[in-house]
Length: 439
Image 1 (cartoon, rainbow, N blue to C red):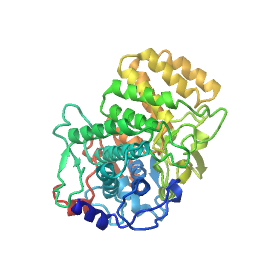
Image 2 (image 1 turned 90 degrees about the horizontal axis):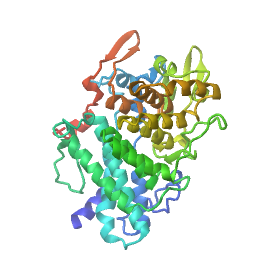
Image 3 (image 1 turned 60 degrees about the vertical axis):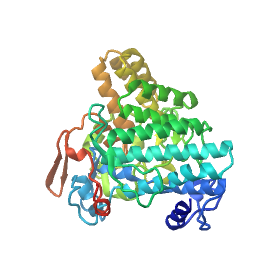
């Protein structure tokens, strides 16, 4: 314990000793080793606050964006845009490997230390449950950035990321297999499920995990693992708590805002301000929409000369990690994988009814009711592309499905990410490799 406390004192240098009622109002007030419930809550809030906005960077690698070649910030993103991970320009934004492990550090302190220090209470259980859930999500993002996509037949041998569950200065951090990391994520979500006791979180602190957020995360987790029934079960449990969808015919507003009735977990910013200035919507993204029937198009895009700027994101009120739209589309996809075509059609229709004009919906309804499983699966993935544009899901969806070929052109040069390209797995950042030769 002495060594453990010393490590906290050295590494956690600052700790917010506030009630932390609102994520936007966290203010550092002192430097202490945590002892009380409020102090551990403040420590975990710092862990939430540290959680990086890495999904913005993944959007640069996808078919969603084109770069503003004459913009001031082109050097920050051009090597990400060109998938040049091996030898990027020194100005290139780095994927947030260290920040994710910093969040994991905070969760480890709460998980390993608060259990013995704090008296038993529902608030203690909620706190530690959130720490398990947040740690699980950090490892999920790490493995989906820097590890190969989950493949049941090769996961045991595919290289993953280092696993750090204890505070140990002498630990040698060697990458574990993809299977080991996913098993740890499942273990953490199981423990979180035993402890989290809030169905939802109030607006303003809905960056914190709740039961519905945990179920939504589990639904995504098992979808990526191709465990269709478990993904469906988790989606159904989440939808029992919140099944609201914004009907864009009646309420023409972006449904990804933190105070939207669709919001489940409002932690991450999917499209940062700097990136919004540096990019336009790609032709691939624009042509994915029916501009007259799809009510999302005028909400998402605004003309800028011959190009279109994306209006989603670049605002703190649009922080979004999970929302109900994902649950509907995951439910449809998993039902289809489970050979329940009619049920999948029903769920798809219930979702798109809220996204298209009445005439557009009628036309789609006729088409969907005659689709076979292959065509419906294609439509579901297209709806994911349209619904979650620049929210950070596209790169991960491409990794787990087609790993399609993508072509980017910059300053007259063409760069190609071929189908099933090894660069669908991002290299560990250079500074991480320098600090840890085991990577």
